[in-house]
Length: 128
Image (cartoon, rainbow, N blue to C red; front, side, top):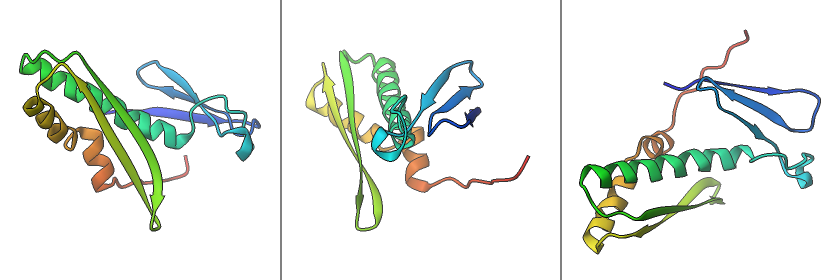
């Protein structure tokens, strides 16, 4: 489904991420945490995945329905609340009527990445 490799050397904490698709990106921590701010933080990458999946899924649905969707903006904020992590997601949808917007908000709750984050995912770690 998806595959990637993250590599870190002696740099604090710049990490090179290479994806099987051929794309690459860099993750880092801000200077206040000892990094250089050379890339998105790991939690920002989680939000990026959720935001991209949300926007893409809503575009696909609107296209399938031939709705006149002009744009979707997905604003995300990750915070800690009562010892748990919480993501606030706000959708700004342009070009649709209120009923269509409500339907897209409903669809947003069932995007693949949304469901993965809501239900959790097992992680198996082993030494290579």
